[in-house]
Structure formats: C-alpha cells, structure tokens
Image (cartoon, rainbow, N blue to C red; front, side, top):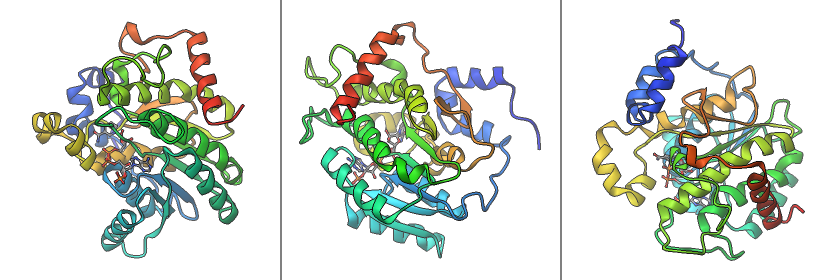
Length: 316
Ligand SMILES: NC(=O)c1ccc[n+]([C@@H]2O[C@H](COP(=O)([O-])OP(=O)(O)OC[C@H]3O[C@@H](n4cnc5c(N)ncnc54)[C@H](OP(=O)(O)O)[C@@H]3O)[C@@H](O)[C@H]2O)c1
C-alpha cells in the first residue's frame, strides 16, 4: 500500500476547493486509504439521521455493509421504508430499522430519545446527517430558525438524551455532518436566530454549519465520547438538486457520488484506533476550522453561543 499523499499536497488540494471538494480530490486521496475491516461494525448499533436520502442513505448502507445494525432515523416513515428496501435490494440481510423523528422539533426529539433509550440500552454511534437549506425564513414550533434547529439544537439535545446508551458502548462516537460552506461565515453572535435583514437560505445554512463546527471542541470536552465534525465535499444528492440547481448545473460532472461523500462519516465511525475527539474532518484527515481571517471568534463569543444553545434546548 502506497503511503498517503504528503500533507502539503493534500492541503494544497484542500485549498483549491474545487479540486479538493469534488470527485477529483476524492479520487486522488482514496487510492491511498487502507480498506476498513469488513466486520468493523459487527455487533454495533449506529443511528443515522436523514437516512432516507443522499449522503445519509449512503452512510446507512455503508455502516450496514460493515456489520452494523443501522437505526435509519427519518422524518417521514414511508420515505425511510422505501430507502431501507432500496438498500436491502443491494445488500440482502442488511440490519436496518426505520425510526421516525423530526430532529428540528425539540419535543419530537425528547419523545424519540425517551422511547429509544427504553428499548436500546447500547448505542455505538450517532451520525447527525440530517440537513436543510430553507427556501424562506422559517421558525420551528419552539421558535428557532429552522437550519439552526436542524443542524445544532436538535443534534445537541438528541445526543445529550442518548448519552446513557452511548456510554454503554465500548467506544462511542458522534459525527456531525457540517459543510464547507461554513468557511464563509463567522459565528452569528449578533443574530443567531437570523431575525434581522434579508433572509438567504444559503447564509442561514452556512451560519448554522459554522456553529456546529465551533461547538465541536466544547462538545468533545462535555461528552465522554469521540466527537467529530466533518464536511463531505460536494455531492450530487436530492438536496443539492432541489436547493442549489444552478450550482449543480455548473459543477455536475465533478460532483461526488453520495457514497464518496459518505466515506469519512463511515470511516470516523468504524476506524481504529479511535480518531482524536473535537476535530473537523474531510476525506479522513483533520482540516482547519478557518480559511478566512474574518471568521475567527473570541472565547467570549463562543461561550455566548454555547450558552444560548444549551439554554435553548433546556440543558441549564
Ligand atoms: N450534498 C452536498 O454536496 C453536501 C455538502 C455539504 C454538506 N452536506 C450535508 O450533508 C448532509 C446530507 O445532505 P444531502 O446532500 O444528502 O441532502 P438530502 O438528499 O436533502 O438529504 C437530507 C436528509 O435530511 C433529512 N432531513 C432534513 N430535515 C430533517 C429533519 N428536521 N428531521 C429529520 N430528517 C431531516 C431529509 O429528509 P427528507 O427526505 O424527509 O427531506 C433527508 O433525508 C446535510 O447535513 C448537508 O448539509 C451536503
């Protein structure tokens, strides 16, 4: 097996964005990756949110292929069952269980977690993949901006409530699916719920993905589990087709497949030894949390965002 391309070359690929995030970057890097142990997740139970579509469906299939029982957590049971049947058609005997939860709805998250912890004493990994780019300013029943609630508040609350099951596993892991779009945004300390100014879904999305990544080191200190944030590169998924049709037209031929975009989430869940906690990953390597000088924040700002989120989900 040839060694992984030099750090400098890999970093250069990353900074070019288009090459690193597209299928080109994946093709260059994956030639150097050792294969995962085919039974790496035997006996493990892995929860994947947004598992009925795109990258989440590919993560569910990939984890099942490594032997896991996958709890496919979806907001629409029929769509979840269709995805489960589709995965099973290619992977007969895959251990897939469809469960319903709208992760942006904090009451739904609480009810779901209570039911799950009653029936599932051990959970080896939770992959917070569910994502949304709202087409217009939208607030949840709890009064939170939809992308903040889907990407940050729901996952924070769900993980907290599932901790008893996670700590029962020998090597528990939590993965937060962020986005390279977060590189463009600072922490939205002045308007975390995006109540002011003209609303742009792509901005709301990127702001909330920035919050996800910024909180990751704090979550790694708080939770006795390996916590990783990651971005999948650019992939051709139903979500991109619906929310970013112009981007898809422009980049179509070089977009990754959902399976390629799912790779790092599966690797973070299955690889040994356990990756370091609290980091931001892409293509199986730790990446910087900032490219732009304008996105750096103070400890006080980070602490304010942390306080806001913990109060919002009722942790303090
Ligand atoms: N594709 C890319 O290039 C790319 C790039 C960077 C980051 N990402 C991230 O990767 C993740 C997957 O994206 P994708 O491209 O695969 O998009 P996708 O095809 O739209 O899949 C998103 C999934 O999330 C589910 N979901 C949305 N809101 C939910 C909620 N409140 N509760 C439960 N499930 C919910 C969707 O369910 P429904 O089918 O019911 O809507 C769907 O299953 C997202 O976090 C996205 O931000 C993707």
